[in-house]
Image (cartoon, helix red, strand yellow):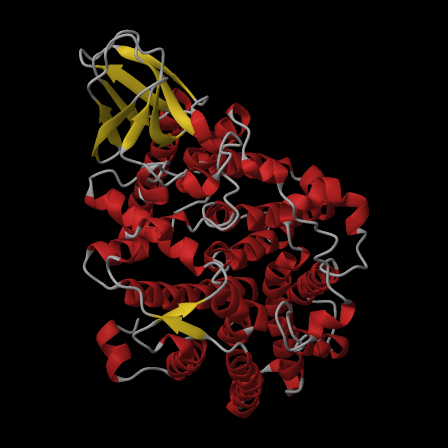
Length: 554
């Protein structure tokens, strides 16, 4: 076995090839990041605000608050309740370490590109057992038009991070269909990771899994052990991620939120057929479809090619579903939550990258008599050069036509209250909020029936003093979410609800001289946290035990 020192001193041909392709791909994808200013996209303000909110929570010793106090000048917004923050802790920790907002965000985006390349490489190598198709898939995946537009046009952090885990979902489905689910952790990590990055991408992934399950049903019926593994994997995924989805569902059932009045018309946002291939946003471009063309000239008997056929069919269907060929109007009442049909391009990108790489590799490999392509590296080099050339030209063109804008965010940018209101549509504000623009105003004041009192803030807690003892209620400057609690000066619990003016938390003092209000969470939140921790601890223990057994038998 070659040591790390040996690899550094004398890397093999495969290692040199991997490193060269990796560097070219990542540098190309990151070209707009080499600047001291921050890239600007549609959702950048909100996601930077999320990062800053996590940073503030970490600095205050409350890193896992579900209601982030930085939003709306301190009134709070349950961003972490409804948008998973799993990977956003990376740039938040960089901010805590002293990196500027611009630098921390650019490092994070670069890490996302790198992670997407590596997971795609690992997934396709696991499917094919060979490095070359894994490299091809990784280049296509990272540099595809929709992926780059997600970063530089939209700054859609949820999808950007979901890109990291989707290849593992696809590899997990191959493992299910071909290898009798010998590596259930592939699908488990893929689905769980996607869920903790982007809820909608998870729903698309689960839909893909359901279709794959139906096709694999005859095999599963013959071999019930596969079904047992599937059930166990699903249970573990549900338990590990329960800290996110259980509190979210509880909150949605307890309060009416603005998202119920969404004005999005999913049918209106559907694309024309030509827009799928157009060199503009939103679109996936022509490049991913070019690489599936060799599929017409390869044998369709090998299991990898048959799987590529399934991926191609699913990828093309996903791309077509973004258009008006799909009857979005008929299903709008059920699918409006998707908002934009072209979100399905994320699935098309992943599926077509995998299938295109397999087709290209099998085609080139078939040109060599005896299928021993390793005897002549010219075929491999030519294929890699062709793929890299097409994708680099495509990527540079995408980056060039987006007209990327930049802005330099100062370290105290979000100290200015109006900037803390950047929550896009504010879907997760309670419906009791009547005037959104006034939420962050007067956040140092509490209101009784006929008086205005000042409040003192300390982290996620505020205290209202000077009560006369005859107040029926006091509306404090926190936006209401299930889980707020209050107590009087003696520590006795007081009743709270969400009936305060403009969505504020309303406290019933019950004769108290002062009230202390804070976000305590709910019993279900604490139980879900414990379930996730116990499940993860159990998985670690099982892995350690298995590793010990392997060492003993080695």
